[in-house]
Length: 207
Image (cartoon, rainbow, N blue to C red):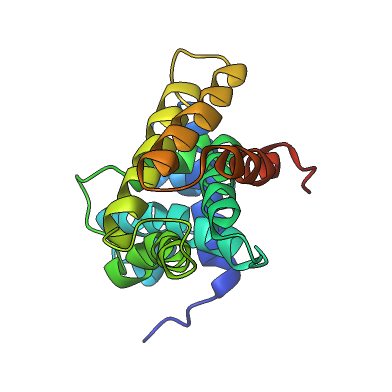
């Protein structure tokens, strides 16, 4: 008999696995379902087994990042928007440090690579707009600048969310991004204002 997939059960198992990562509990088939009220068969029904569970958990990190990006309003300042995307990346990592670690665990494939790549495309589009309005040099490659911005975000997140540095070390991002965008052609004074405005996303209250 084919078992019906219940989205609520799938979410329950993903949240349970994320909690176990956060509390550093060993994750096995039996420990995952312990106390959830569902059987081990649910892991096979929804994920095809534990490998599929890890793939889905890895994907969930990108899914939540994309959901945050989708709520960002586009302004008429692409450099501010590019900075805001970096700030929201950091917010996502700090809110979900357990999922953040799994996002980049290449031991397991991503369930949907295209959806994961779509998060980087948000930065692509902001960089392309910056070039289009003359804030960045015409020869700027949007994907290259997007990757460089992502690299700043990933480095800071790795050092703060799951690493040795305190949260206030994130402030280095303002200096790093300002230097990056000035080096790509932006006016220094205008760039600093844009980066500082975009960076405020990091401190906005959230649910």
